[in-house]
Image (cartoon, rainbow, N blue to C red; front, side):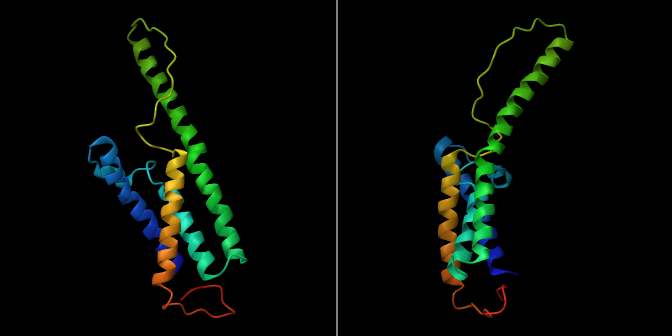
Length: 164
């Protein structure tokens, strides 16, 4: 398999694992389920794309099309992780409130209407900006480490775009 894929997947796995002790430090609650959930610190999306982009920059060079593609798509992924997905989570809170309201209406309860301010998502669907930055920093470190560890294993042909 492509070494860049190994580096990116390792970064994603490490970011997912780190969510558990970081959550514990913040809340004093150990939750292994965080390994399989989205959101939280650090962003595994950011870690994966940043490590791949860094690995490509160090291995192939910044002026290459490989780097340009990885950088542009990585920025889109990180923007989406903290922007659009976060807003989707806020919308989900509103929809969940509507479901509760409908249940109360079915039972003919008096339903006082109360506008609620969105709270931080328990589901952690999206990322706060600092979580995206944390993932990016982790990814850059992992991309650099991957490049250094795989440097001696590098067998590239000048005419080929793939790594062996």
